Every structure is written in structure tokens, then in C-alpha cells.
Image 1 (spheres, one colour):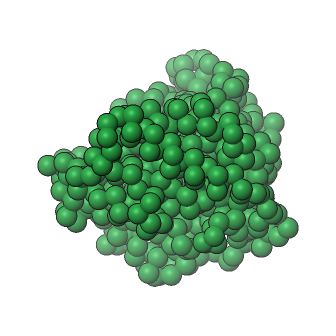
Image 2: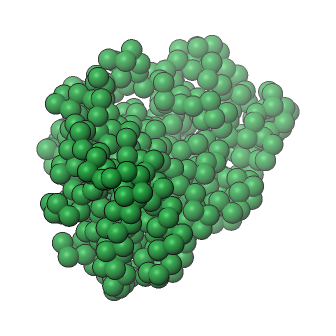
Length: 509
């Protein structure tokens, strides 16, 4: 979807066919404000919310991004505030009617000469951080692990200056679950691939209990028994902690020898996500991330976008961008699986928008989805990953995940991201310990409010202070600086990180 925004001090119209626009001015538009095209606002319209650019009669389409976001439930006069209650949610694109004959655009020109300073691993992968990862096979051991990690970070880590951090990977899985259920493969491979993350340099330590269903050997990426500690084999709490510290310090010795070296951008895997979205997301931050995504793909990197419910209503725009019929079929497969998953819980995609999304001007999931897919840029889609699968293909990927920030982030980590580009309009301090999260604000007001939490301000696009391309390049260069250790995200600076959150659609016993 190519966006061609029309911006003025009062509103942003995204596509020439749109019959609504969003209010730009701080504080919104007062009733009686005269706009271009002989439009006069009929009431106060909050910032980010939609105003009608022409009369819309009952049953007629309400159009934003050049796509139908709903049908009018009542007559809407020109200059009126178009609210959620004025829109009837349209039917999602039928999956069995989608074209599976891809027609991707011509490849974008190659971008050469860009590198970063990373850590080359023995398996050929590259890390952007040097971290000791300690993962659990079951939730029962987390308290002991946390105690040991706290001791390690306070007393031992300072002796190893080349190691960035020690991260204990929490998850609420491993026992009390139907381990043989078909969908159990999702949380199991997620934990397995988290343990293989390139930022751990192949030195992951596994803490198990000894009686869990997810046996530690299934989680251990090295396959070596000495990388597993079973707490039931230890003589009490102090012995448990001592054993973890002993094994961890041996790993720290090895990790401390790692050195950064110049690596091509093609080694990077970057995730994109949005959270606390508003109506500006689809016209500022998300398209800027999309532009940066295209730059990364042109340089040979891997970029993944996600969030099934924020793709479902735009799937007809994505299948033509697949590089093969097989990739288009994979997109449909993931949409169909999630449709059935939601139906099993007596829910559908309309459950997606949050109260904050709606307060920020997003009326429904269709409008949200059309803005969300802008993060994918214009590149051809080269592969589709099921939840928790590891990326093995370069280029633009769709990684199927729920839209939940925490679950999406966890699954993208399992897929191997080195960094996540996270756009937000309402604001959220969400972050990940294993990989930096770059916060990109959709509005200048949010950047000014959270100067010590937002890394890049894309709100300048709406005000005309910067172009989409300029902010896209700013994001691209910031990625290389963070990947090289030259710059730090605010979340990493404050050391504020969320717990992992596994996606487990399988039964819990």
C-alpha cells in the first residue's frame, strides 16, 4: 500500500480517495474551524480523530488509506466527527477468494556499503550483544534462578567487562501442560529457539527441576549435559545457587573473550511491532519504519513484521506481494489458523483494538490493520514463519504472532531478531532484555512528554518538519549504531524490561 499523504496544519488525508481525514493540531479542531474545500467543523474533533471531508450517507463506505474501514450507520454531514459508533465493521477479505498468483513489484535497488560491529558466533550467526543467557525448562525453578542471577550481576559480572549482561529467561511453561498436544509445538519450539539466540554466543545455561514434562535436554542448544543443572540433584538452596554461579562463571570466562568485528548488514534480523497505537501510527511512525525496512532489505538484511489480527483485514494487499504462490499460501494458512483459533474462544478480530487505541482515534481493527501493515514497507515478502519458528530466509518475512506486545516480542526473539522497532502513539515502556527495543513515537507531543523513553520522534512527519524518507534514514542509521554498541536505547539505559510471554494455545492440565 503506497501512502501519499496530504498534510496541512489542520488535518492529514492519507489517500486521494479518502472521505475522512484525521485532525493534526494539538488539542484537536474546535467547532466552527474553517478548513480547505469549504469544510467547516460541526463539533470539536479531538487530535487524531476522523472528520468527514464530504457527506456520507447511511450504508455508504467510510474510506481511509484508500480502503473501506466501515460502513456508515447513520448520515454523516461534512465536517463531522466520525466516531466508532458511526461505523459498521466490514466483512474481512474471504481467504478462499484471495489471489494466490503473486505480482510483486520490481525489486528495489541494492543498497551497498553499510556495515555494523557485531559478535561472530561459531555457528556462523552474528550477535549484536554479548549476553549470558540462563533459561529454565520449567517455571518452578525461577525463584532460585533469579536469586542466583542477582548475585551474579552484583558480585561476578563486573569481573568480565566484555560481557554486556546476564539474562534469566522466565516463562510459565514446562509442566502441568498437555505436552503431546499438537499445538504444544508452539511454546516448545519458542523456548528452544530462545535458547539459541545469537546474542548468547552459544553459551546458554539451562536450569531444570528434574521432574518436569519439558525435559531440559529438549531446551539445551549445545546438547552437552554439563550445560544443564537439575535442582533436584542439589543439596539444598545454597548448593543450588552455588552450582548456578559456578557454571555461569565458566560461561562468562568464554563470553568475555568475544570481540566485535565488522559485519555486513545482511547479518541483521530486525523485528517490527506497534503498541499503544493511534491514528497517527499509519501516517508517521509506521510508514517511516516501512521505509527503514526497505532500506534494510535492500542491504540484504532480514526484517519481519507480525501481529495476525493487524494483518487479517489487509491480507488482500499482502498476498500479491509474496515472491511465490507457496509464500502466498503460507500467508493464507496463518490467517486461517488464527481465524479458527479466535472462533474457538468465541472471539473474532474485532476484539483487537484497546481502549487506548480508540482514544487515539482508531475506530476499529480494519483501520488499525491498514496502518499497521505500513511497517512492512514496499518489499517483496520472501517467507512466512509459524509462531516461534526461526528465520532462515533473508528479506521481508511475515512472522505469525498474536498482536499482544509481550507475546509478539517473545515470538520474534525466538525467530532470531537482534532488535525490535516499536512504534507507539499512546506510549508504553515495554521492552525486551535479550534485544534492544527502539521506541518510535507517532506524535511530537508524546516525544516531548517522554523524552527519556522515546528514541526517535516520527511526529515531525505530520507537522512537515521532516519527510518520511528522512525519518526512515534516521531509523536505519540508529539501528546500525545500536547494533554496533555505539548507541543505547532508552530502555536499555534504564534497564527496564518485560518478562517473556509464551504463546500456548494447547491445553493446560
